[in-house]
Image 1 (cartoon, rainbow, N blue to C red):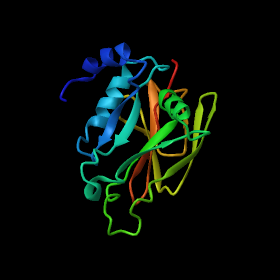
Image 2: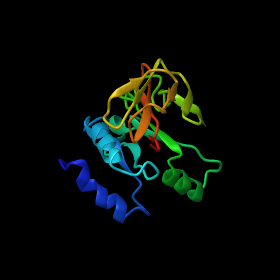
Image 3: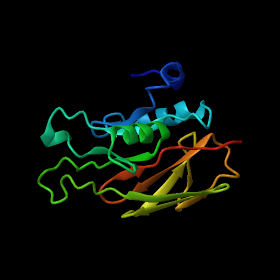
Image 4: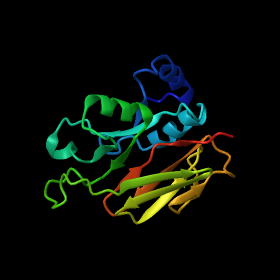
Length: 182
């Protein structure tokens, strides 16, 4: 779609019991401006009611679509209720692995992007722990780069939220946005 962020807002409000996010990546990275749209949508929302990001394959062809886009759900048990709760609460992160669908690679189907292992929030400092990453970048509501370490102090940031992106040679892993109360 070519609609601006305001067009989406009423759908998220009307269907807030079943629509919790947007595809930030779809079928690889078909729509690269979707990350900007996601930030624009969240810029205008309450920091306690942000929209989660997803990375999905269309899966029309296993040989060229599988394993490029995926989520990592943080669940205690592998049940439908736990999945639904994680989805509603934003207890997941997502990844984009450009060559993930290349079945000639030894890494095919192995989710080689960085893995988020811990999130700690201490007052105004968000600290992220991850494995297998080369760099981390933090972004604000305007999709502007605001930091490049695994911790971010949000006390002096004029933004509705922040989010982080971990990168390695295989791809990128994205956190959900962290709402900031001003």
